[in-house]
Length: 203
Ligand code: GRF
Figure 1 (cartoon, rainbow, N blue to C red):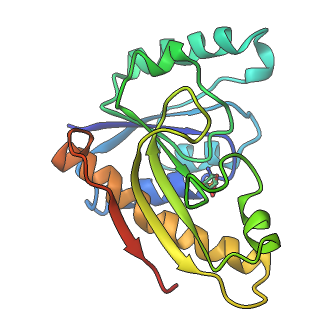
Figure 2: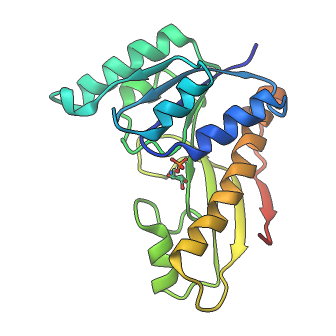
């Protein structure tokens, strides 16, 4: 069985999309664990609703990033994941974890990387009057949102589109693309390939 661990910090709608796709057998694997760094995150409830073991590791209880990562690493080693998915996980991982799980950690980021790494991507798209926006799934390395790109989903920004509508459309892409790519890992070992999957959306 292909074992998936999901790291989250917030609402967890992408976690929910992964859970649903596993239940519906659209992902040839199972989520064996969730790790959350925020005790108040709604994502925890989502994991509990489906009886998925969820470890809450509050980063505020650790003196350094390395100590926090060591604690996360201990949990990951126990869970023995084939793939680690950062789905709205708002912490930067250090080499402690990245080196141990090389090519096994992916992140979903709401922009067409390399454009707009970091926060507030939707706002930047609107402020800059960008014609296109989208999401990127990439391998995680020790630079912020800079690992090798695996897949992108792109949409056309409507004239005078507001940020709420844009975020809603971006989430729809995420909830389609992330399960699709996770299933690719489960079935095709995509990490050994060099091609980038690319899709244009009209949501
Ligand atoms: C998503 O937009 C994802 O791209 C970004 O954080 C957001 C998480 O949303 N990294 P959710 O918690 O999955 O609803």
